[in-house]
Amino acid sequence: MAALYLRQLLAGRDFGKTNEIATAMENFVYLIGDADTRECLIVDPAWDVQGLLDYAAADDMKITGALVTHYHPDHCGGSMMGHTIEGLAELIAANPCKAHVHKLESDGIRFVTGLSASDLVLHDSADRVTVGDIEVELLHTPGHTPGSQCFRLAGGRDSEHGALVAGDTLFLRGCGRVDLPGGDPDEMYTTLTQRLSTLPGDITLLPGHAYGGHQAPLGDVRRDNPTLQISSREAFLRR
Image (cartoon, rainbow, N blue to C red; front, top):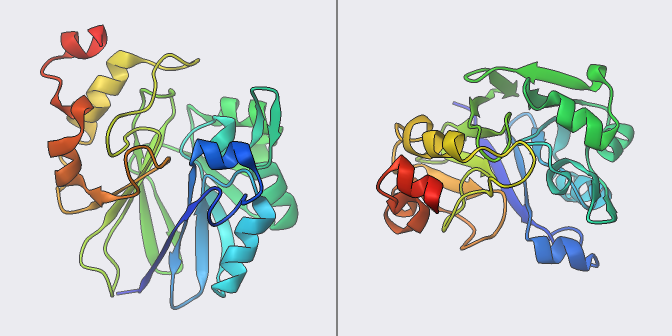
């Protein structure tokens, strides 16, 4: 079994250190790879592309592709609240590679980043992307946006359990908003109570923002996250 390489990088601490907006947004970017082949994928590159490339290089890792959870500019670059955010376009220019996106999110990602269709690889749920000998399963988890996806990692040679990189689908103490364009509270409820309900409690939840914490076993999140305590679809939609 390959050795899993996994880094959780926090905006304002590990990259984007002089960007007050990035620091306030508390975005996480992840590097996922094979510690033996020294290849990795970058999840949701934004804010400070050169800083992210420098971090990978300092770990002697080569970025061979990008995984994108959803189209919002703080996760893939573009314009947001009058600010221009670096992201996929700058990554691909500096480090040519493909971006793996859900097929329902491709139009949004192309719109906000200016990338072409040839820059993207479109996926369905349960597709797998490999880097070295590490396999990443792509899970379609709509609600925050139509094509939101999470990334499931099996435990590597030196790790006991797997992980779920959840983007803005699920945080330690809440879930992603559903009042932005493409948001759907009904789909979010289905995602939280059905699409993610079969995942084992001992895998580590790795969220897209440090809202309520950095990481925790999924079983603890199910116990402590108020959003997951809502008893019915009707109550969820009212909230």
